[in-house]
Length: 507
Image 1 (cartoon, one colour):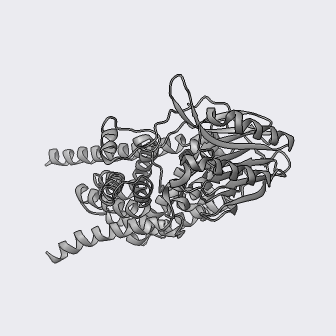
Image 2 (cartoon, rainbow, N blue to C red; image 1 turned 135 degrees about the horizontal axis):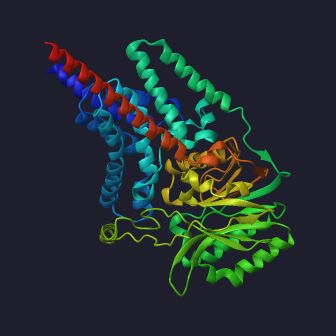
Image 3 (spheres, rainbow, N blue to C red; image 1 turned 180 degrees about the vertical axis):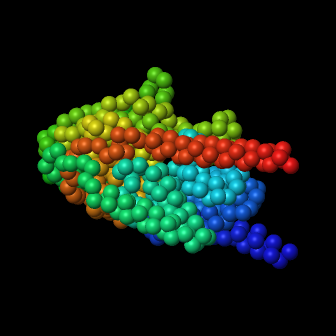
């Protein structure tokens, strides 16, 4: 009985502890090698147990992972959504409990297999479930993907080749190799692990893209307008004045970028009185502006979260991948009913679609992403061949002084490394940053300060292997491994059954 207790419950506690350790691998904690420790521990906890027990341990891991990793949901719902403590706590708990289902699913699928197939399949199943969560469910929620924790380790070398999912698979495979080495004292596993990481280190030395022009000066404005004041009618004039004054101090920059919805008014309300004169000023100073504001189609009533260029080119980009429960409501009509009961009023926006032409500023086309769009790698590589740099405008003011702004900035860094382009990331309350093509932050502004980040970027051309192929090759490879593994196991069992039948007939 005591042995069973430790066999069952010690593994359960280890699983939830591993989930907590896993989150510490990500920003702002930044202990990336803890992700390797956490996955090794989880995979060990999935050994020699029933599918049901593996499901439970996967779920416990998910509770630790998301309970700490997305605790910022409470801040958004309570502090800025104005829900009560109980309502905010319940909604945050439901959110965490839902996403914890995915590590549980991975555990259950692994538990259906017998060893050694189970051990070998763990990294494959883990990544396939991450892909499911990141791409398909509720419009995708690719938060805390394993690969994001590896931006500052040798495994970052796989990112321009295979993207975040490829780097995540390299990490999960490393955990399996460690497990096999510890269980069987097989030094070939240690050699394979060393080769895997050494290859990643070598890939980091490859220059995937090249400069196509001289560096130019940029200025990213961080207005630090808190979310509770951002949309107050009395504050609109002061907000516009602040951004205009900060802009006028940096006309020496070839490109000036404002953060998401830096203009708290619809285009039709400020176009003639504010934006057209500002665009004229930018042209006179041979500078271009990138601003952000909502656009409303008056005849249809459709609203768009948009970015607009002013100066030499006047055009707009309308956000295509909307934030679930923030800009669009999935699971209708249930979600709308629940939110109305709780008194939460969230935005309802329309997608701008994926057929929009690239915007142009500072003499070059660029890839635009608005806030949550930067968590999807394949959005950043769409028409990348034409683009010289990336621009992301964000408002993380919804999450206060939590871990979310740091996690979001880490995710944005991934897009620079995947594409081999400089990234300009202008945020309302921080973290505003310039990211180099190698994924390193060159400069950044601190949270909750009014400021302007000045620096230089170089327009780049060329495509990384990931930019050419996207996420699908990794997905196809993982599915192929599963099919080959299933087929080999099927034929092995068939052959063994045939041999057993022959022995029975002989007797």
